[in-house]
Amino acid sequence: MTQEKRLVLDWTKVHDVFPIEKHLANETSNLISAKKSLVSGKGKSPEFTGWVDYVKEEAQSVLHSIKKQVETICNHSDAVVVVGIGGSLLGTKAVYEALTHSFAIVNQESLHRRPVLFWAGHHIALDELSELLDALDSYSPSLIVVSKSGGTTEPALAFRILKKYLDDRFGTEEASHRIFAITDPNDGTLLKIAKENNYPHFPIPKNIGGRYSIFTPVGLLPLAISGVNVTEFVAGAEQAFYDSTSEKNHSLETNPALCYAGIRNILYANKYKIESLCTWSPKAKGIAEWWKQLFGESDGKENSGLFPASANFTTDLHSLGQYFQDGERHLFATHLKVADEYSLAKGSLKRKIKIPNCSLNDGFDFLTGQELSHVQNEAQQGTFLAHSDGKVPTLIWELPEMNAWWLGYWMYINMFACGVGGYARGINPFDQPGVEDYKNNMFALMGKPGHADKAAQIRSRLSSGNRLRSLGHTSK
Ligand SMILES: O=P(O)(O)OC[C@H]1O[C@H](O)[C@H](O)[C@@H](O)[C@@H]1O
Image 1 (tube, rainbow, N blue to C red):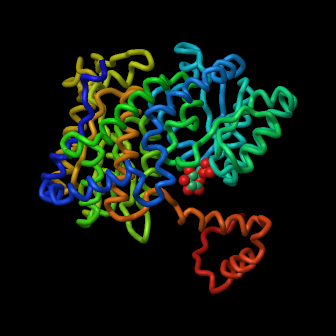
Image 2: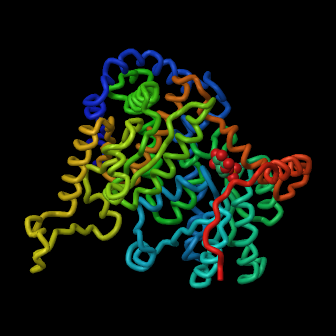
Image 3: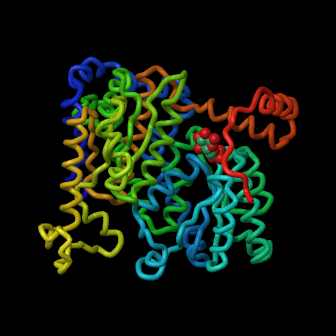
């Protein structure tokens, strides 16, 4: 079924604004050699390119190995809290939100009676975590803690708090049957904790960095629990692997990953410094969050790189729309559109919505009887044209359907484009040295052993100099 359809990357409306075709032709050989370096493991940080062919065989054996745990968890839990941050959470959240019902109550009671997923460890905010603890009282929850390094502050603290909650509620013995870890296979604090407490644990391969890990147990275990068709998800990615890496497929016309990588790099080199991924359903917002980490951490190197932003339309046409149309011309838009809008509702209640006939006199009678998806399509076409008239290069991904197979396919294509584009630009798309700066300052200020000297230095920098501020109202 799905195989007859195609993912399309339409760059007509880039060309309307900028002569991309000529530039792409000049860039092709650079892209092909970047692709060869990535596939052969001869580029920068080859020790982090294990994700390239992981989807071919290893992901299949993961699916096999998690089967029993998935059943066990589904038998005793109706909610699973996934604890993680960045690459240890964003992909899972993206796929879950896109492919399962938005309203947990329907997900659980009407559809497939699978546990709902909740999220923790992706911030240090008291308000949301305390509300999560309130909500968990109404469920029989389990916990999956995901951290490759095993030492990231946010998930480590959330894990402590949630483990205590489970211990207090169920007793340590039962709680230990409700806790699962996904982490480095050989090292790290989380692995040690899992072993000491007999928590079942699953590996994140050493040669796969967080933002490239969605097809490892990081994504597959929680998504399988939630009822997402992970077999199809992996199958889509596997097909994308063949389409992207094939020795025979160096043509930009049949290799969307190469083409996308090339267009991004060319636009960046020609004054377009911001790329906005524009999604068209609230359910796709998480996809943009995943995409922002993938490209943000990969591209932002050596004081250069496209800034990845996002917009969710049509909602944001009423806030950011003005900027897209008339603001500074330093951005381009990459839309993620779904060809078969009905596929969006297929995972839920297969419902088509028509604009009903109402005696409202609201000026919208001309739409009576039209399907909502038709209105969405017209809104999209109108937006693409308006933005390209406003000189915003507009790139359009058209996904045949929003389902596990095509989402797996598209996510892999983006990962591959990210790796190729980084190599073609001469940067390392597989490290993230900048993130360490914030972490080290935070560790020092929190008093982590070994950071004392740095703490004193930071505190003196924070308190020195004149404080520049503006004061508002005094409380009564
Ligand atoms: O999985 P973890 O080791 O906890 O890391 C979670 C995230 O933390 C970071 O700071 C990195 O910049 C991300 O690339 C990573 O995905």
